Image (cartoon, rainbow, N blue to C red; front, side):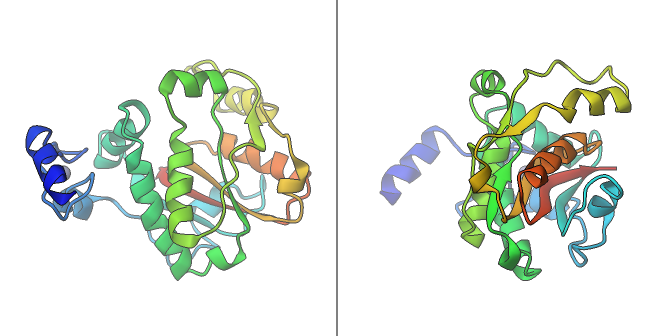
Length: 228
Ligand SMILES: [Zn+2]
């Protein structure tokens, strides 16, 4: 098997998804150099941090963790672009693995019953070919062994581009976009809600409200990146 992998690697050399350099046998998806350059957030306080504070007064978050700091034109942006639009969903799984280890270390995972990713509208998912947040959720689940649930939280409307809208308009447009189709799957559960990147937080907030309205015991949030 190894032999065929080596042959394949000669014909189609694996390259770093950020810088394009050839990967060595011990590197996966992202080279060691780029990995060391990643702007990692501080994970020491999962109860009181930039992510948790962003939801203050809007949605009660038990704990929150974003893996990377998002700067436009930075390495995180390149990574997220590849992840979302360039058919590179494995990036989400890899960073999900790293986040999984942080959740174990901070003992957040002890209190979580289920992982739910922010859903795409089915039409958008077909167009893109995958929901990037599901890969991220799978990566976390692989390490923490917490089960994922992909079918209960649904996005009901196909969203238009939101970039030209104000903060308030954006919030209004996502407020009633999500629904829970199977109440039992969230009832009395501590849910880890996951997404690729937090900008305004409006999408996660809307999802969180739906989950809590359906009887969940609590919400924690993990994302790949957090914008300033
Ligand atoms: Zn690289």
